[in-house]
Length: 80
Image (cartoon, rainbow, N blue to C red; front, side):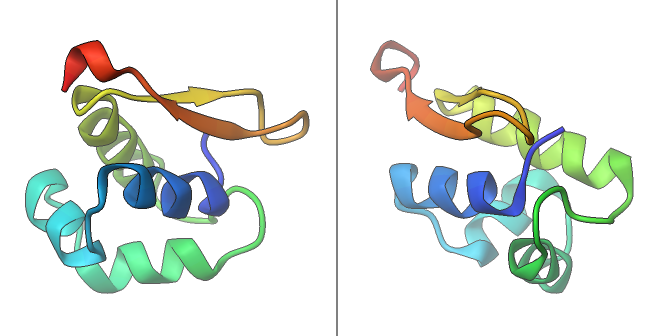
């Protein structure tokens, strides 16, 4: 699972708006914005979280840590 902070940080890394992520992932922009406002792991459809995660990973974002232990993101520039 990924956290709301990781989603926001990942978007910042690749300089994407919530709308761009919504368009590419197939998840509604309102859903993404709600997820990003949550504390910790968003209480959302697990499938939507996975779609967001996979979309960001295809762009080189790596999710590190766990929700409980130093969650973060980094960019794998070789994938971009």
